[in-house]
Picture 1 (cartoon, rainbow, N blue to C red):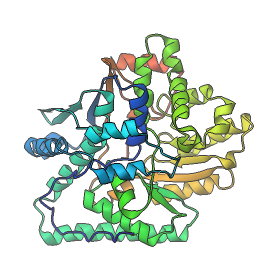
Picture 2 (cartoon, rainbow, N blue to C red):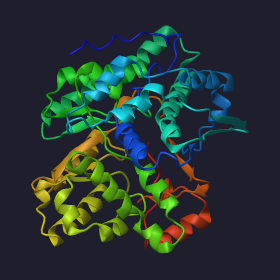
Picture 3 (cartoon, rainbow, N blue to C red):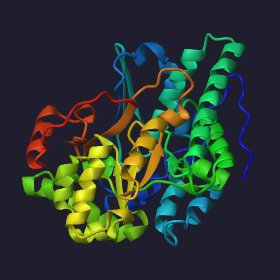
Length: 423
């Protein structure tokens, strides 16, 4: 295992994103899926700041943002990075085929559109879906770190040291609690809203040194998984269901069947290896109506990314039992606004009834005493069609109001409590 970095007490004069593997691993299996089935689809991704009290347009200089985005466009995958992906066998033999790897070899991040409009940053990434999708993570990494840099810009070196000291203290407190609760299994999911590249590296290195692999299962960051010899964690994201729904929404039946289409194509591509449901794109209730007993038997589990995790887990236990499936053999991966107390509560509630694991993000990689922001970059358009995400939390819903209304009707979306987006 490589030794983890020593933190520097100043912001280095270097780009935020330095290589294209500094991204969530799920971008690669999704990328291959898009390459194989939807390579000619056009998609536009757009940035949204859900923390309305923080006016990023006043804080982040436009010239600095452009500089960082332009730098990403100069990056390419090198042979060692492609070699790592070629040798990724943890889920299935030869996960990535040569045609997709050849595409990555020549991949160049496409142009972006940036406008400062009052206090808001309007940032979009148009192009082929295959090419625009990776911008989601790079864009978020850049914006959050530029924000943090501006927040610390006027502080002395000593006061910056104090911020890091507070972060180390909080991290050590988490590690001590985890050591006392070895039943908590988790992966680091904090790339998109991390404090900084260096800090995420430090956190992952410390966790790998202090905790056993049976507890700290891996990281979603592909670069750090390679660096520390960890399992790269990730399957797929909401964008798959959102884009495919947009492509099939010509009729209500087509829209309703779009999730089934996505699930069958995904199983055809990866079978059990990456068989984790993501049920909340258009509401978990409608999702559970479309999955068959056969699917519930075959797929390894589900990721809970919105709504009440206890209620969501109970809903799945009921569905598993109705299908004749033992819930104790299925995995719930909770990943929504987690902190250590919530993780302990969820694991205790489902112990002996449902396997639990956690995708721990912002509270793990951006907990140093500064305000955390809820930032997202999501798919907005596919072949010119407006896209929708409903979520189990209406505060996370996205899309044109009329389209959202239609999706709610088609998917039988009921009443859900709207809660503040924590991260």
